[in-house]
Image (cartoon, rainbow, N blue to C red; front, side, top):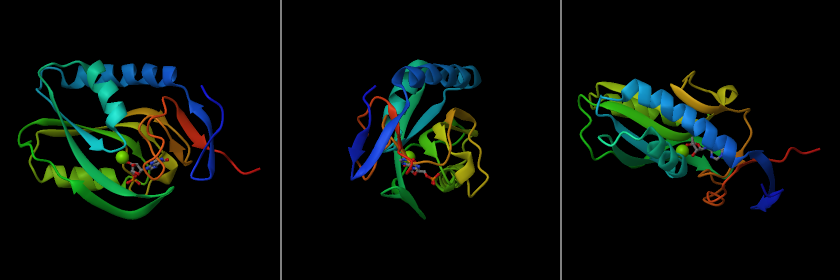
Length: 182
Ligand code: IMP
Ligand code: MG
């Protein structure tokens, strides 16, 4: 793992190594497979942040009869939430009567998750499950708790493995956390 990195004038330090990410992706994939195998599920990856996690998770889940699709929501500017959740690309598929699994990068305030689930439930799916790579329980403004969580972390800003700062640093293999001021 590289050492400190600087992006947009902010310093980040290594936090979760790619090997540990791969381990937890395997664990969560096994939990999801156990719950939805045989149900013909539809996976919904939330762009942009979840693209890398979804690619790894979906391969690990390995249900060839399932489908994956993509939606896009945005709420962040720089390192903090705007409090407003925008649907940027909506769902084209019919999910009526289907078992849905949402794949998200991080649940912070829970506002995106709550809005997505509310929007999806209007389309009458059979079930909606929510999987996230990261959960910041102490930032919750909604009390929302994901069904599947790879890592629970404190309310600090992180980047890498799909997560960005103003669109940058999604390419990092490991997850980095913003450095605390002394
Ligand atoms: P929420 O609606 O506040 O739960 O935030 C969800 C979205 O905010 C995530 O899907 C991310 O795109 C973004 N976000 C929240 N925390 C972080 C972070 O620490 N780093 C990068 N993006 C974040
Ligand atoms: Mg996201």
